[in-house]
Length: 181
Image 1 (cartoon, rainbow, N blue to C red):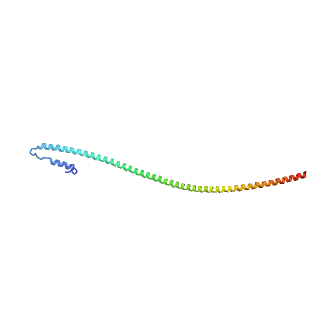
Image 2: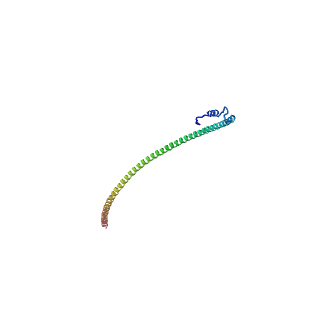
Image 3: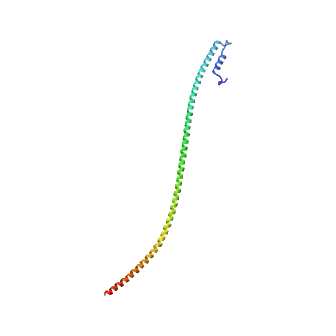
């Protein structure tokens, strides 16, 4: 018989029937044998009581461990849910920052292109202004030479006019002197 398939009642009946002597056999005292069997039966009953107590303790301990396992599993489930939520939140934040950085990078690229266009336009305007200044300087240089020439001519003309007036004045003065004298 295996220990797993034997019930307590089966063991009791086996012990009672197997070790009872209805009569005395040669060399055995019926009273001594029955006393011995009674002690074995009482020891067996005590063992069964202890076994039942241990079994109840084990069942209680099993229930307590099952409750602890359930609590720990619930805690694990809660922690996993919180960890998943944190991961999702972190991923959302990461994606949001990535999106914001992408928008900012695009804005900066746009601003850079605009500034480059403005710089190109400004450089073109500056080159045009330099060309205009150079042309104006050359024009002024030519005008300055022309002006000097015209001034020289005018001064010469004025000098000629002054000489002509002086000559006329001297002639008029001499004529007036000649008339007076």
